[in-house]
Amino acid sequence: MWLTVLGSLAVLPWATQGQTPAGGGAVPQANRTDPSVLFRQADSHFRAGRVREAALAFDALAAAAPEDAPHLWQRGIALYYAGRFGDCRTQFESHRTVNPNDVENAAWHFLCVARAESPAAARAALLPVGPDRRSPMREVYGMLEGAVTPAQVLAAGARDEAAAFYAELYVGLYFEALGEAARSRTHMVAAASPQFAVAGGYMHRVAQVHLQMRERR
Image (cartoon, rainbow, N blue to C red; front, top):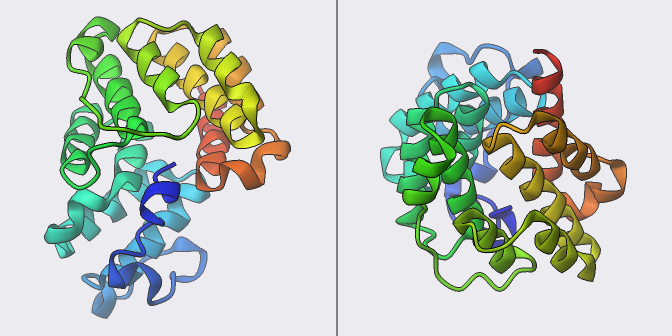
């Protein structure tokens, strides 16, 4: 996802320091405002599928480092899966102030608004983006606008493995926004498959967590 654009949170000094509490457990009292510890705890919770706990840990991180909160796109994803769609929307609107070109940010914002209100409302509120040259991001954005079909996104993703992964991921998420659960699952299963582990990186784990969450219903 934004890993390819921002180099993850390497722009934030605390994002590469400290250690996660064992098992993603409670943060010791002395470390409850340490951004590096909070980030790793939140990330550990999310990767383990504990999305509500992840969202709460990211909340604590945003409170501990408010000047860096707009960078926390991972918080927005955790908020989405925790069902906090209003907060999710706000996080991605904030992230746009530090990463205005990113189509993925607009896509997750679309998801949050669609789940809170409707796909039509999400389309009306679609965040503008700048040039995002990654394939198939132009087609993904067109799909959110209603100008490109999911099939066209998938065709554009046939260029290489990374493009194929992102095409499957965002087509799957788009169908979820439309309320088409069966069609969404088909593409999310594809995105979560082992063949995309390297190409998808962090977002491959997001696809896997997505399936875990939806199968719990």
